[in-house]
Image 1 (cartoon, helix red, strand yellow):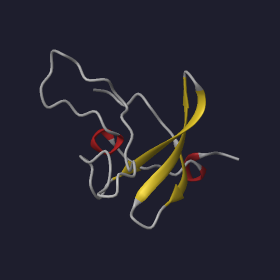
Image 2: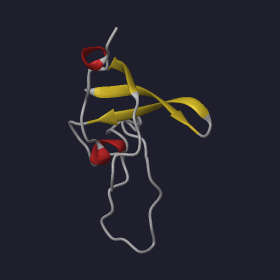
Image 3: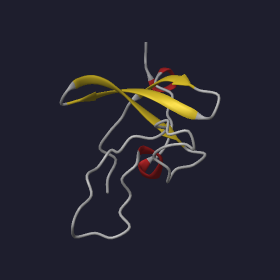
Length: 83
């Protein structure tokens, strides 16, 4: 898959969960991603630490669906902006 989604880091929580602001068909939303445990949707207490970015395809096995699995890179917008 190509990179098709970007977001702005809003906050980094103590457990490594990253809160990201993103624009979707529902407007600006918050999603969560945790790169420490990229394949877990919830932690041991049932707290959501990663959101699904894709729906499961009936044609694919072992498809990456969670934000932590689909993560590509961080960027620095100010570093690449000409003012």
